[in-house]
Length: 228
Image (tube, rainbow, N blue to C red):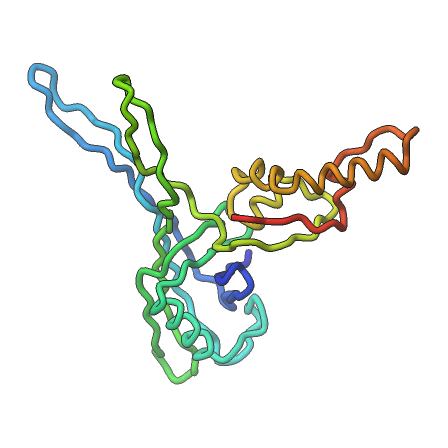
């Protein structure tokens, strides 16, 4: 298992050198209990709340056998994290070998030394970040247009980038890797429609008598555009 904190379009990252002894992702539902006359108590379903997770460990003063990577100096980590916390930066938290691969903000950050070892203990509390992207118009029965907001999980905060297609890639995998959710795969595929048609046409011209092969194979080594 590895724990990564990524930001700035995943171009910058921190790997936690020492894994926390434990962690727990928690959430809650916005349900409401009400009492209906002559019926009793009922549960009115609401929308889910934001997930939260807290990580506590330490930044080692020296390399230990159980380090996940070669560590930097302890206060190098705290300086970066303090800056991210103060800027209220959106963090892409990835915990490998788990399903935790989402966007969060740092709700609280504390650190300090408890002995003379030089190790720096810390606690990071994260809250899920969901971005209000845009509004959708609904037509009512009376024919009036009503604008209502809806939430979408924030994809990576990128405007545009390019990704080199690798063997075994699918649109779902690339969408998950580059935007944080595989649900964006159709949009990514549509953005690259011209490239898909180009490689398909080039293959048919070069191999007119050969059976058609999957487009995912034709895309290997090509640069696809990722726009969010």
